[in-house]
Length: 580
Image 1: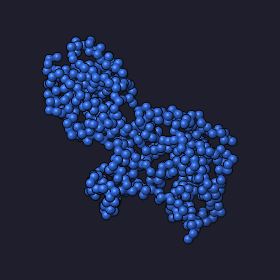
Image 2: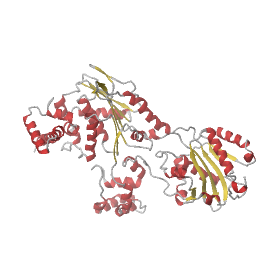
Image 3: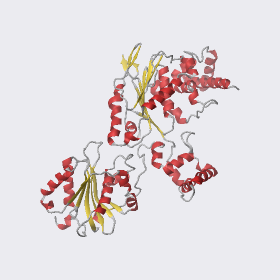
Image 4: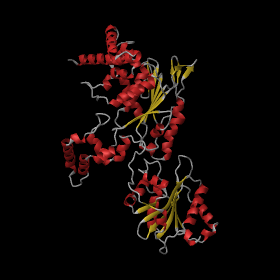
């Protein structure tokens, strides 16, 4: 059978299958009757594939048929292409697009998908091709991470419009008579697609067609996050603000006349993989106006699976066995996997994902695996502190201490998104253990923070040193606290030394120095400080954690208490026992 004959059979079968489904949906025919009527319709038609033909008409109603027939060179494996079989989730995505675009059930949808799930092709390129050909969107905007991403999108979608089924059904819409460049594609059916990099503003953009001026009717934001966009709180907030203050405003509301919608509102489609707990993708996920479609690489608890599978545990031991030559290790691992493949194969979202490659990434880069492949929207990183030892407050107070210090990590603002002010009183026990006697995280104004420090100093009379990072208030807080000390008779004669320096060390590096001491239980927390402890336990690295105030304060305490010197060994007492 020739390639042409195979394609003809594929086209006929695809048309018959989806026409049957459409007849069942439109007329509620039983399947057998719908099949017969579909067969009769195809047999009687004199225009199956041409302009205004049966295929074009069916594609308008059924987006999955459009993709499988008109874009078959992209989505259907053939002898002359390298396409993979589609995964079940790809069809689920197209069902979502059917509701979004054809049924017009909503205007906002976010697709959170694993890296490598082909979201750009399956959604962005295919959907914009569809909306433009049927003039559902007269003006479409696509926003990529960079200008080069936008240029690549344009190169690919131009090829789509040259596919034989599309030219046969819609004509050659790229004639050279309209604007065609790396940013803009204007078609002869008076529609336009423009592609932008995330750094470019789209404020006020419109398309001037022969029959009017159009605002964007579809805006697709495709995987715009990068490492730079989550480096700082400001960078994360800038990305969120750009969407809500600029991109969202570029759209248009539906037009309603006499209670009937005559023009749909702008469709906003966001594609991506989360990079941090409060990144742009996760912020949109929590926005109630957005419908969210989310799929991870597997639909089960991957941690439990790998930890409870003895074959994968053996594989992991081989992987990290330093006695095996690196040149030989991969061969040994491959052999072990192939010999035990029945016990090591697990279901994935798509045939593209190889179990062994996924396992390698999980065992060597779990944080990245969870973020990129499990699209873990709550905890995209691995928790650093597996175990935190806690003691009752009274028991800590009764422990003899050789040193006691106060550590402060102030925040500059008290908004919902700002950091907490963290304050910690800690001591070094005569037994060699370090104790967080009391740790708090609170949203405090400058005056509240200074007064809170005074409260700690009065409560814990054996504090000798006050450690305050200089980055936030550049010593103005130290001056204010010293002024309050001079005004308080109970503190006036205390020998208190301030350590006020700029923090220049990398936070992750500093915090990582305490992983062993916390996990081993040699650094002990007061069980009453639940919020403080929970924030420490939730830490997964600076880039992937919502907050790091508490654990940063703990790390500073643990490092500084080793450096300071006291005149004599002291025994820690509750100031209430002194009658103060």
